[in-house]
Image (cartoon, rainbow, N blue to C red; front, side):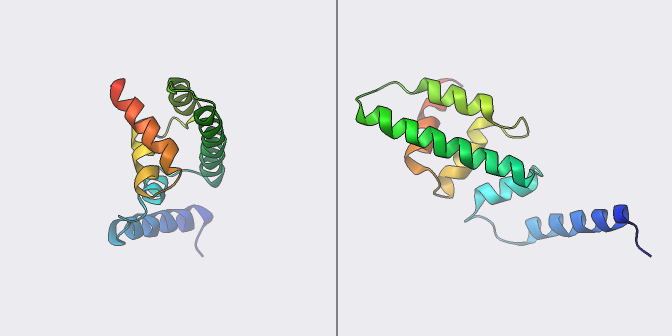
Length: 113
């Protein structure tokens, strides 16, 4: 009989094979999630963070703000340590999630290399 640990190892191996064999170029954020082994909670936290920052971004943009460095700092500070901010920004942008926000965050991230 297979133990829980053996089953888990097998499933992790299958997941790795799936990641390597399936063309996930259209889903770079999902690929990043799988490669970095994020939990569902961590992914939900990222989506919630982006939702909140996007609302702030649009409100501030409408109010005439021109500086958004604080949004990049907030994003980087709240992101799980398993991910780098720029890699995550690019993955979300390329998967067309939170496009306006991610374009601005990417632009800012280039300034602070």
